[in-house]
Amino acid sequence: EVQLLESGGGLAQPGGSLRLSCAASGFTFTSYAMSWVRQAPGKGLEWVSGISGSAGSTYYADSVRGRFTISRDNSKNTLYLQMNSLRVEDTAVYHCAKTVGPTKGYFDYWGQGTLVTVSS
Amino acid sequence: DIVMTQSPDSLAVSLGERATINCKSSQSVLYSSNNKNYLAWYQQKPGQPPKLLISWASTRESGVPDRFSGSGSGTDFTLTISSLQAEDVAVYYCHQYYSAQYTFGQGTKLEIK
Image 1: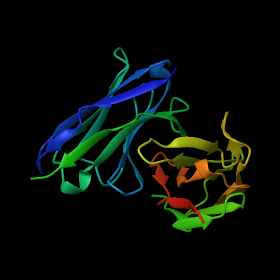
Image 2: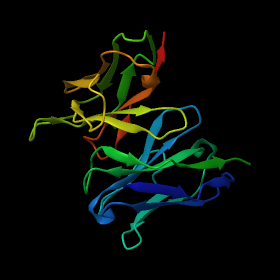
Image 3: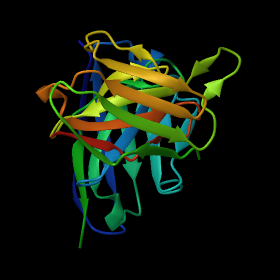
Image 4: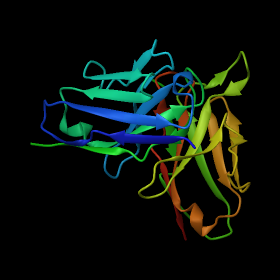
């Protein structure tokens, strides 16, 4: 059974940093691209960042490029999102999502998400 | 970026009636080399992560009831629920994966009339 378990969310001040993790199990982690998708309270889905299975390619939404860094440790079956220079508008539930293949594609499994709140 | 626009933003349909949600992309998501539309539909219920319903514009995922269907090509797509059930109350999103800069529609909230 595929499982994705996010952690690392919490309260951060504007300009601060947080590091999110997503522990994956139930599939061959290195064979699949992964993404982070966020949802602000009461709002829709926003794709944030993606990484290929080999970690050779990374992609970012314009809203986070230069502030967030996606990475993965295939030996630990874990996806990360380093979030720096946080803004109030980064407040959201952050989901990790598994892609159907090693590069781009649709998301067949999602985690429950971890809440990030940016406030002074 | 490819902009995805859904219509309507909200929809109220009687039980047993048809529900139709539209999704339009700002550029074609049809990949000519394989003739596939890189378009998926998700259902999200309150407090839950999104659930994949349809991929490649019209391929229903295993376990998804056959009252859900997807159609369209190029830039215009439709999600149809043929006979609305109470458990279909949710927000529905389209998603393009043609570009690695993925984008979602703004969502359509489906309610019972």
